[in-house]
Amino acid sequence: MTDIKEKIARKVAGFFKPGDVVNLGIGIPTMVGNYIEDGVWLHTENGLVGYGPAPEPGAESEYLTGAGAQFLTAYPGAAAFDSATSFAIVRGGHLTATVLGALEVDEKGNLANWSRPGVIVGMGGAMDLVNGAKDVIIAMEHTARGGKHKILESCSLPLTGVGVVTKIVTELCVIQVTGEGLVLQELSEGVTLDEVLEKTGARLIVSETLR
Amino acid sequence: MNKLVSKSEIMKLFHDNMTLMCGGFANRGNPGKLIDMVVESGAQNLSIISNDAGDPDLTIGRLIRSRQAKKLIASHVGMNPELGQAVLEGRMELELSPQGTLAERIRCGGTGMGGVLIKTGLGTVIEEGKQKIEVNGQSYLLELPLTAEIALVKAHKADALGNLVYKGTQRNFNPLVAMAGKTVIVEAEEIVPIGALDMDEIHTPGVFVSLVWNGEEE
Image 1 (cartoon, rainbow over the protein chains, first blue to last red):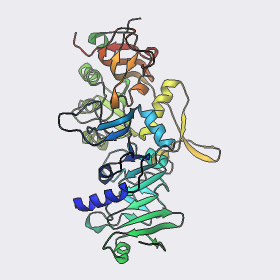
Image 2 (cartoon, chains in turn cyan, green; image 1 turned 60 degrees about the horizontal axis):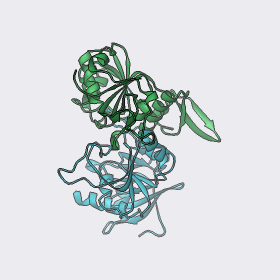
Image 3 (tube, rainbow over the protein chains, first blue to last red; image 1 turned 45 degrees about the vertical axis):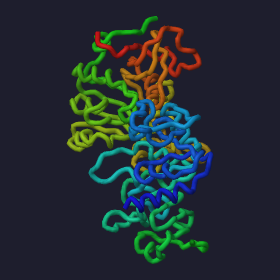
Image 4 (cartoon, rainbow over the protein chains, first blue to last red; image 1 turned 90 degrees about the vertical axis):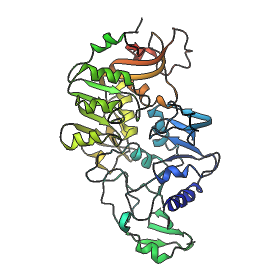
């Protein structure tokens, strides 16, 4: 299980190059931070660009924490700011990408990841992130518990954003969201096209350059 | 003008039916001792504006557990299941605002503006009941300002004029909240002499601040 998550996180991390500014959501997206190249800057919505991994025990600072209240470290050159500035970075198009999890994604790039029936959580910064980041990459396991489809013709849960997702990365494949629909770009090693089709609840366009 | 006050002077300001705005994010950078004071005051029917609902036994969560809060405007409440329970049981009202929108609504309230146009939430439940405005062919939601009778702020350093410096990720909503209260009360980790803060390092100019407290009992 951890293996699957690590595989997805490593794949997504490979998309980023030094100088990119990226915001990582919770779960698999957080793990992406373990595999990014030096020089990729991480943004956290509570007000920091340039954070690094968790500190050594005993070196925690209550002045250096992430959106989940977890302790962080900061690289030289990191900058702290208030919440309005943090979302100026997000909404103003200054984020190269955000990596988020999903409950559902659909053919039109709609995303549902903040609300499920009977649970009151709130969207936090997710709606701002999907509307503001240049790339919205969904990093998730291909199906939900019991094999239930997460990639659908149409989302049924409350939406986080409309037509916002640009890429979906799962343990099985990489899918690009285009104006024509979902384009299957890449299969993971040992995965067949049939397996992906069976586990996907949406129409997939197989790229001519499928790898 | 000396804005330094003692705990008892602040205690007098809390009363029933007031709107309180609070800095802080996920229990970090919250004015925790001021929130404790609100709990101690026993003021009822409070409307709270805060990024989140804290943990059940920390910061904002304490005002929910004590059943003093009747309404919360926030972006994320997932760390506090007791808030969810109170909403499901109809004991509390919750208004969710996306985090960046919440920040701008507070800034709007503090800067005397009538609203702000934001794309966030278009096509989602967030647009319900809101005016849509088109500018240069692009749709936006009109998001309205937020203000409060009392704003509670946590600062790292303050002087007697109310000039404030925040530290690290504890800044978060504090500088915004510090502009949007009719009365702005600061809980400072350290009080420094007037002149000790360089004018270029001050995050919140004292003109926004009403009262400064050093966090100590009498």
